Image 1: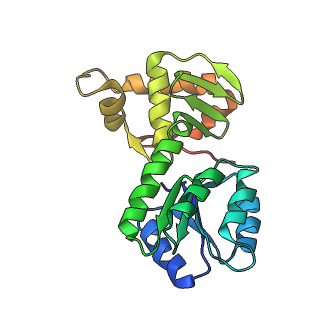
Image 2: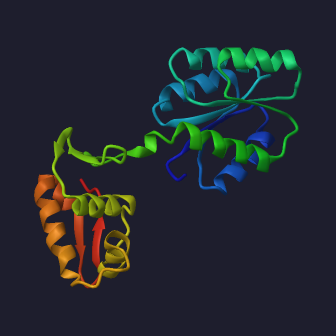
Length: 226
């Protein structure tokens, strides 16, 4: 969620704050726009980062329908329309334009958050299968690892160890914790086996191997540093 960016577009500052407070509490990142014109400007600047748009219909300058049309010309980002009107014809019109969800005001913020989470789980599921940190890309579905676009060969255990480090980016992991999560709790061997695997992984990663940092007296941490 920490990396999920949501654009809130509504001409009512009080409404934007209400929604923002609930979403920030769930660790979502938020950017805002107070009208349709500003929404298009903000979207154009951040379109590669925005994961979902909450879009009010009735706004000054440019209405929500027009904003939606322009967004759909270049993006399939999920859009939830917020409106004070709940007529069936409006909802059908919204779905024809490419709305993913349609919520009439007044609404429960908790229900809104639940619907946002459901849409993001559905639309971001595939994206989460591929992780790229500092040029190291792990494809979870294919169980492959590439460095700057070139695939490298890892053993199953090396793959699982590297994935565990990337999944816990910037977290110092003890050898015992690594053993428990990568080798499982039924492993009774010497923890130095981790060191030998780390050495092999670093070698295969080439210059990117420096991202695996040895934490003296603890274990290891993966962190991308320039």
